[in-house]
Image 1: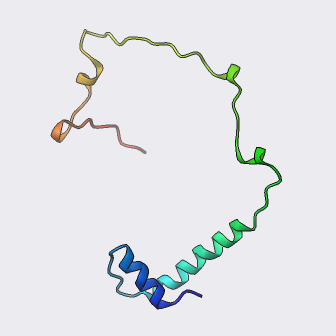
Image 2 (image 1 turned 180 degrees about the horizontal axis):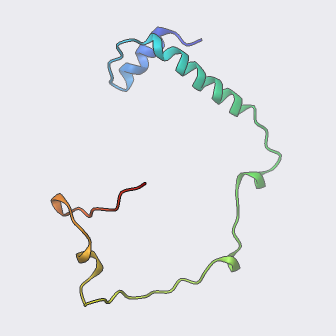
Image 3 (image 1 turned 90 degrees about the vertical axis):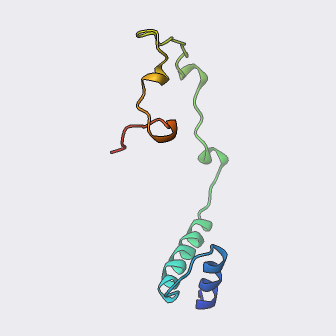
Length: 91
């Protein structure tokens, strides 16, 4: 069982102020319970832990230069403050 004192200690370690440590006890206990369940899982072989790709299935890499109007591609990208590149929003 997780105690209030332990939750307060964790809060101090990560340097956050917990106004009501009691409400985190159940959440921490659920997390610990989940890890206990994971510890009980048995694997018969290391083959279950990895997925290997055959080398002959991979595509051949080809280098293609970008030459639209002579400008490098990096100069065509939208830039934000401090010259950072703005990427499209993830949906």
